[in-house]
Length: 78
Figure 1 (tube, rainbow, N blue to C red):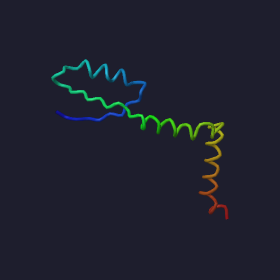
Figure 2 (cartoon, rainbow, N blue to C red):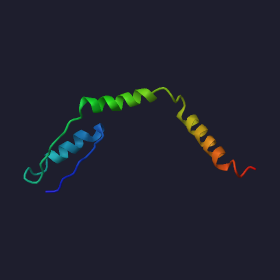
Figure 3 (tube, rainbow, N blue to C red):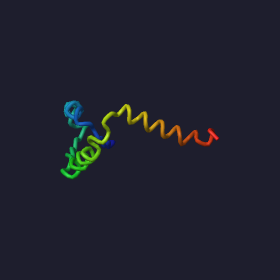
Figure 4 (cartoon, helix red, strand yellow):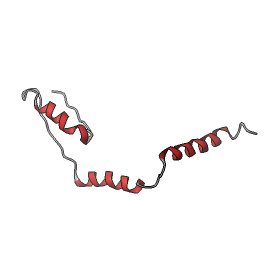
């Protein structure tokens, strides 16, 4: 048998599991490893740190690009 490991978005998890569980049992051995509480906490805490920091994502991206352009082309402006 071959072995694969999948990191699946929760929105499609049920669909993937439904498909896998409907394959013949003699061809597939499913071994689920649920997310540990520390893994779940890490992803939500990272989101919490960034939440609310960027009020307008489009404007933020524009500013980042302008800064980058200034840095890249500053030598050509002399």
